[in-house]
Image (cartoon, rainbow, N blue to C red; front, side, top):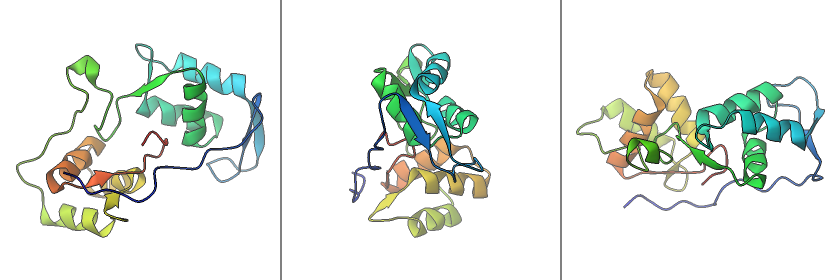
Length: 162
């Protein structure tokens, strides 16, 4: 069984219900205000079979210059569920299984070392998994598979889903 992690995700963002205040530092040079309806419209047009794929969530965040967690909150206000986690952890029911990941017969020593060195409280953050995938030139879901092999839990999610 994967190791348990400290902390359960990101803090809830406080904001008025009709406006979303963007903080500088998420790829946008200066603060700006976005109407929640604009964000929710972007979420709505990004749905695939009624769900919001992880990859499209990050595309919406980049397009509007908001934090990924703010996209998740807008989706949750519309009762939209997420799908197709880029690490393969959830949202693949349309392909026959909830999870895409599986234990691998073997992983390289260098990949195992990178994963183990990035653990915080026994968990690998989603952001760290993405960095390792980029450094190793691997698809992100293979990092999820490597973690399954090593019985390492991935948390927290950058969207705040887990």
